[in-house]
Length: 314
Image 1: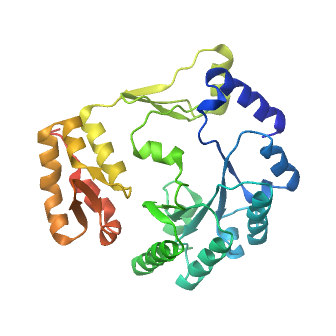
Image 2 (image 1 turned 30 degrees about the horizontal axis):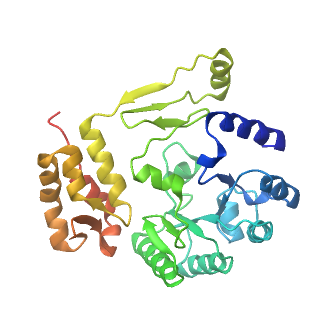
């Protein structure tokens, strides 16, 4: 996006909500786009947080992931953003790549910490059906990293960032105190949000809706002033399940009393009953009325969450 694009965008936003309401304004960028001139242009707008899709500080990883930037470019991009005055920088990293060793992952994190970002989002590579990576995995061209290696990488990630002073506030997210992502945290706290653009999703607490994916059709609808997003009502069971999944992903955990207030005593008791074997096993902790994953529970979080979900008679 160019300067004129951002000017139009912020003028439109300002007409709907004055800048006094803007608490966090994040822009997501790729390192190869961040020339000195582009950084200077971005600084002229109200952005107060920058999120950078680094993925890896290893050139071999970046080639595998088909990224345009190099490790050197990523390092320089972070440094130049810091020089330009950004004091809230987030870095995305990926681990569990085919052939990646624990030593290589450790080196990635060391480089990241030397850059002193305020926030890190670290995701294990997943293979989505219909993607090139999935096809390569199925055909045997690449081999997924083993479970033992995955556990070792995630364990090192947690230990390394905790020792460096980061809060592990969500399964995949780490922040310096005071620098948790407001944007992501609003999803986990069940707050309403509005999405603008092709494929964008919105949520008002009672309904979810999503815009048409085809960008040409989205533009046609915009020009005609006749949007037709798909929409679904969120029934109480779905909202309960969403609450379980999102709350248990966070370090705040699930407030059991609040769960009862929102969904009734029957649903609260169901949750506690389903949680008993995991509490006994030490993968869930119930303390002060808060149910949260233990460190060992994080590694089996999908199993735990699915067991606490409510599946209707249908």
